[in-house]
Image (tube, rainbow over all chains, first blue to last red; front, side, top):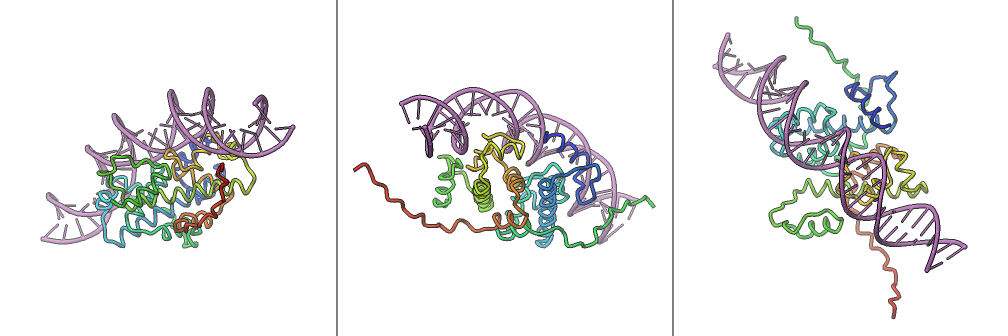
Length: 120
Length: 120
DNA sequence: ATGGAATATGTCAATACTGACATGGTGTCA
DNA sequence: TGACACCATGTCAGTATTGACATATTCCAT
């Protein structure tokens, strides 16, 4: 069923770009995930460009700082709806949002390999 | 409050309720609604273009016929996520979906008024 | 008409998403 | 050093969304 797949997604913590050898993501689903990542990134960029804090944006969309943080990190607990709503509230036009949605994956900007800060 | 906006929303089945006097619809929210309407319309068109039945699409997305019906009528009980997922499963590319999301409202395509032979 | 296929609408238990809160981490300034 | 602002993460109870099912409606053949 679909639930099983969802479960696998969660287990993977939304890790997507990374080859999912044993994690078979359907095209549609990986597309969804990538869209969310793009939207999340855009939210952060738009917010920062307006020199806003997460708390301020939270108030603006009637939510809390923690949720905004999750939004921007594309946490698995945030819906596409909330992502888009946030962009809208930040003043993004439909055209702008459509552009983000339709944009291809990050142009190979050499994905940074999540460094582990090892308590030096 | 903007009566025109409310009218359109109500026409689309989005209950704004009679108590709309204190129910302020933000621009962001009406934008969300319009996006959903556009996505719903696209789902139906794509499905029909593939000569599929709602039931077939339902199986394809792991859902039921009733939900697909609600999807296509932009019922308030369907999320943006499901709408986009449906388009993806129907084979739409990110670019295509982005186009729908970013598209301006239907330019009032003056439907040709089919002459109604009214009883007479 | 009658039947059947496609679509629409209502309901419901299960699950997903939500805002709020607590708490921890990091950087900065004095 | 401490105090403070900002961001991340975990949890939880309330709400929204889900698939499934029943049923109604529309449409098109026969």
